[in-house]
Length: 311
Image (cartoon, rainbow, N blue to C red):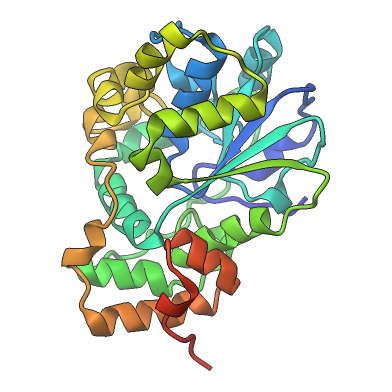
């Protein structure tokens, strides 16, 4: 298992965790619909539109270092329903178990970049660091020094290119174009004996009902027809936004405005930022980082639509 770690997560926390038959591991790159997919799984498994506890408690981010590992393990061990666990760790950093279903969600990385930019602005960094210190004390872990924060450019376009061109190895960074597509590639290349479900953010937007039914069928979950409208409505962005205190990732206390976590959730936001030259530059960069098939899939392109990669 490859180790991935940054300021707020460490994939080594998976070591020693006991998986059960039927467990679901939701593994997506950041800002690709992780919380949305967790909510969908909660609704399918519990079959109720209202959550009994906050989503972050029901489906914890196992490798996030702001909660004590011992507490997360205990919470998951106590669950008697089918478990669904969040992670931003790629497949090569996770335990591989054919009894488990792995769900990975892809999204146009250009939208990921803009969503991550706003996500950073909404973070309550002080709350994250305080929680990190408390968790380390409970787990008796000595924290190393924090990395020096990288200066963010003033302009949104410049921040986009910083994210796109970042060469930091995927094992050492939370989000970049490289990190996003390399994460997806690990699932694209998954061993056939693993039960992997690949979802696309655009499909969830276009046909939430159909995608939820598809996932339920794959998971072997049967739901009465009269319950479907309530569950689908509860999975919409508008519904999740109105209940942000229960649905937001990492807990409401970690965000300046929890409702802003569900700001838009739309695709194509990059269109007003990038011109034709930018798109060609972006396509050239993306083409160096992943297979043609993955690049076409994640960008919803036909093969002939793709700009040639740099040589």
